[in-house]
Amino acid sequence: MIRKPLLLLLALSLSGCLTHWVVDTDTRLQIDNRLPYSVADLRVYAPEGSAPDIAWMPDTLVSGKRSSVYDKALVGTLFCSISTRDSLCGQDTCWRRQSLGKQDLPGGSVIWRLEPNGSAISVVIP
Amino acid sequence: MPEHPEHTCFIYLNRMTFRINWILILILACVAQSSAWTVQPSALQDQPMLTRESQLREFDEAFKPAFDSYLGFGWMLLPKPDQSRLQGPYGEQNGFAFRHRFAFMMQRNPDTTSPIRTGAAWWVERQGFETEDFLAFPNYSDQGLVREIHTFALLLSNTRYDAGVAAGLQWQHPEHVGNIFAPESDSLWWFGHATWGKLSVQTLFHRTEWDHIRASFNLGSRAVLGSDSVGVRTYLPDLSLVLRHDTSNPLCISASQNLWHQMLYLTGSWYPQQSGERFASLKVYGDGSHLVGAEFGVRHFHDGTWTYGVGIEAPFVRISCNLPREYDQFFKSRGNNVLVEFYMSIEAIAGKSLFALNAPRSAPLESTPVKKKAGSKDDFSSPDNTSKTKTSGGAQ
Image (cartoon, chains in turn red, orange):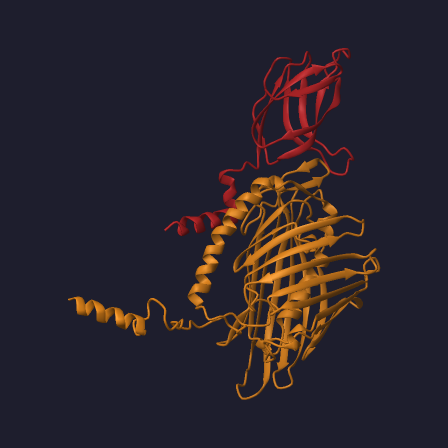
């Protein structure tokens, strides 16, 4: 009977938590720093300051390094920011917060390649 | 038109399973082309008021002295996680807006010789937004909101006078409020309800502050309550009037009009004080029990825009695509989004009838043998067949 598998399929489509078999509700993110300076401390932030920042990646990456993979239960289009070390500053503690703008985090494994784009940073998904 | 069609219950069920296959195909088609709808945090915060009112409306429809029990549940989940994105402080976040509800009402005669009945009712809804979908145990994430809304009531009715009273509590309980939402606290409301014949009145209070009053006039005759199943009286309208303390939206007028044999209805709601916000639906049902039906709806918003939607419902599943009433029930959802709900809503008079909420007639409960028509091919007693047997006998 074809009706039984169809009904089973219907039941599966209704039982929500089973969508975890096919849907990622986490993003596993890795950063490849192709900038000529160091970056650190990736965060998700609220531009209006209405909610506390969510710290994602504590790593400090010197130029040309890749980060470890960090997992966060966040999927969507979110505002991200990163700390950059100003090369003109000349001191180790001279970090500046820089926004990466609204980034698409589609869930699953994602790698970001950070590349210079004038004074801004562009995020390239290879 | 006979009250119950001549087909058997078996055929009725068989048709339903056939329909379910079509429903499945519809789900897949709709899900494939559904677009995103963004949940606003304000819609999540405004929802409880509308939910409490809809629970009381359902209770009003379910509680009649003659009815024995009501069972309803709904398990709404969106098939795709990017279908209900939350417009949060960090941007748009994927997740699952959810609405799980359960309703139960029961009435019994403590003394079988007396017409006095007692009973109890419990409506509960768990609603909110969560980053991961679930069946019973939420993730309680920082971006999640899980809330429970209960309506409890004790019932007392008299079938001889067709009158009943009920009193109860409404309890709103925030189970989990993520740090991106405004904090919420537990709240209690209390209500009184009275029904007599075709008229029912209910009113809700928060402490000493009046919240709203609803008056319903169910003029259309219902066979399940012992009235006519055909005739002029079935074409009388059902009217309801809600007066709210909320000054921004103080009045709502609803009407439901039978257009054809209590199987085709036109329903509408009108908010006269809210720049004429209104919506209307055309509903077609499979029979008078209203268990299987389809709906086409249109809504005019107070900002001047219009939306259209369609929906189908059957025992165990309900699908709606942009139906106007979902805007009130499901976090102001609008746009081309598909909601699938594992769903049931059945009212019963023990041993006699089974029907959907507010339905006029019972579903066919007993299988009746289909009468063979005289002269049909299977009828061996017809003269045509007898003559055939005779000729074949003669050939041998």
